[in-house]
Amino acid sequence: MSPDLSKYLSLRSPLLYIGFALAISLGASSYAWFGPITAQGETAAGNVQYAGTRVDGWTAERVRSHAEERSEEVQTKEVAIHTPTGTLAVTVEDLGFRYDTNLAVERVLATRHRGDVIDQFVDWVRTLTTTKVVEEPVSFDAETARETLTGLERLVFDAPVSPGVELSDEWRLEVVPGVAGSAADIEDLLAQVTDLDPLDNELSVDARAITIPPDFSDEEFQAVVDELNEQTRSGARLLIGGDIRQMSPAALRRHLSVAIEGSALVPQVDHAGLQEEIEEVFPEPIGTVVDPTFEVDGEEVTLVEPGRPADVCCAPGTAEKVMDAVLSGASGPFALTTRPQDDPTRQAWYDGSLVVEQVSSFTTPHNCCESRVTNIQRMADIVRGDYRVPGDVLSRNDYVGPRTREKGFVAAGAIRGGHLTPEVGGGVSQFATTIFNAAYFAGLDFIEYQAHSQYFSRYPFGREATISNPAPDLVFENTNEYPILIWTSYTSTSITVSMYSTKNVEAEQVATRTSSRNKCTYVETDRERTYSDGRTVIDTFFALYRPGDGLDCNGNVIPE
Image: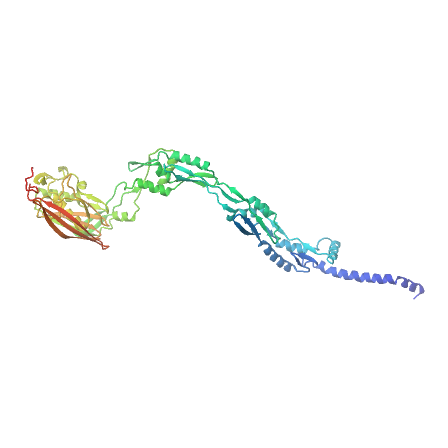
């Protein structure tokens, strides 16, 4: 080595050592920095803190798992809402706070991995001395918070009560005043919630109470009520089947109220109740009853043609039509329409299906070919086929009417004032006795009857009836459970009345007692009825017989 070179090297050797050291250091640093650069977007940088935890070098999957746990932790936190009636808890999530997990992962992986090479190198160098804290991604939706707070029932401390309507003692509609309520001030609460930091550990707000008026004032209700009272002040005149009847204002008003529909007050009608009330105005059947027709052969009865009950009031929708007309100012009368009887029991009464057997029959004899026989048989012809449902009252005078020559009756002997006197229709009392006994053994109730004033041996002693026009009459009622068909037949020497139905009662005579009323004979006859449900009923019939033709109970002659 030359002296000059040796001299040069000896002079520069410290610099060489320093250069070599710098080269080695730069190489090591480059190698250390190269790792994070190549892992950009896949792992977290060094000295990075997220949600209170160092995440240096964490993979994206690990960061995401941690972010999801943090999201669940934050969004399930509860905010205490303090109210005058107690404290309720609502989750942060329900109050509109959202934690964005994807954004959290993105922020963590981007920290110290942004900018050019120099910026990233500088950031890397800073990891040696400083910690980078990642901001947690929390957002707030005020509309969600408002919707949640508005829907909390416990934030209504006293619900307001809207005015109502009732019927006064004077049968006028009047307003029941409304009552104000109290509830939390939602806007004030919303402002407090907006200022919350859901990352804090203690979260609470205070609910301030404010007065909540009813949706509508008493005065607004009163205006509607006044109009309803005016519209119904005349009630309603109703017409059906040629019959006009008045419905009172009270009958209309008790089915009226006022309802809140959206932003309006509207009259409310109880149509079902009003329909019932209208039907009570016309409770009777309306129109014509069609009785079933039958053929009878001995004890056998055959249905020929079903009948149907009369229509009733009223057709569906009647209440709506009447009230609409009244509230529109119409004066009436309002014509109503009938509807078919829909009671299955009454339908069965008239379709003939319940007349299945003979339940009683009675025959009385008479001489052939007398003029009175013509009247007896004419009476039988008129009554044959008479059909009576339960509850029907049967008056023989009303059903047959006056016995006149125009109806085919002739003059024959009749008892008047205790004397046998010829008159048109005379002799029909034998028919009365015959049908009396048929009804007696069918178990029907008697409303009006009178025995003959003289006893005739062709009749049962004390168990018979007479009839004349207009009195005495023979009236009985079908008190059984099933309809009764009355059928008559005759020969030249007898008259028979039979009754057909569904048998549910057995009737029999159980006792006869006689006593004197001066010279008259007083007879009491007991009947016992035994029903299919086991009930027994005993009733008593009376007869008073004079001592002879034309004599009273004192034996005196009755003036003709």
